[in-house]
Length: 205
Ligand code: Z5A
Image 1 (cartoon, rainbow, N blue to C red):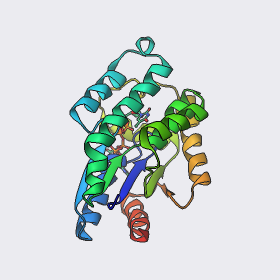
Image 2: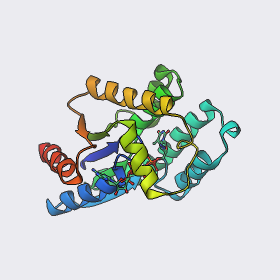
Image 3: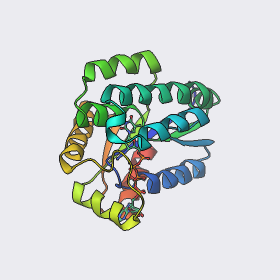
Image 4: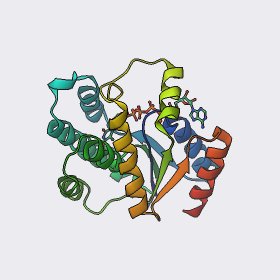
């Protein structure tokens, strides 16, 4: 694997999509060839799995089914897009990856993180991101930003505040356990401040 693998994480509405575009511009300005992608999704088949995950009504998909679909989509994404791009030496920027599984299916849904870890090894081998930017903000900030967008809500966005509280705590725990890889950025700050912090972390790798 010659390329760099950068992921961006955080609860909904903290600014992941906004900042993916910034990271892409920074990497291109530094002369990198860049692939931008997202999870769940990124390939035609994985995007179909994403639709199933996000649009199946609550009771129609079990927590275990949701977990396995996340990894099924990830296996396709890795095989068809991410691994080939890294092998070509490209910088891959992915909007969410396996930390989201630990945070949402582990923290949010309460599934066994030991099982998630086993699936991670089966699907990814030893592939891990080189850098993960965790955009962190209080739930009120995320809720306000989502509301200002006025989009339709998906399966996750229908969850209650305590669910997102558990997701946020799980993300912060991951960052505390892997501080070199996972850099926490205060996403409640004005965008210009958030992007200044992101640029500093990018320059480290
Ligand atoms: N999921 C999972 O459960 N397990 C997994 O393994 C994976 C995913 C991979 C799909 O997520 C769902 O899949 C996700 C978890 C689950 N569900 N949830 N929740 P997604 O990534 O497609 O959707 P999302 O997390 O809901 O992302 P989002 O709604 O697109 O939000 P965002 O990308 O973080 O935010 P944004 O669109 O860039 O910004 C929101 C608004 O805030 C926008 O108007 C911006 O202009 C504004 N903004 C951004 N930054 C700022 C600052 N700093 N100041 C002021 N305003 C700002």
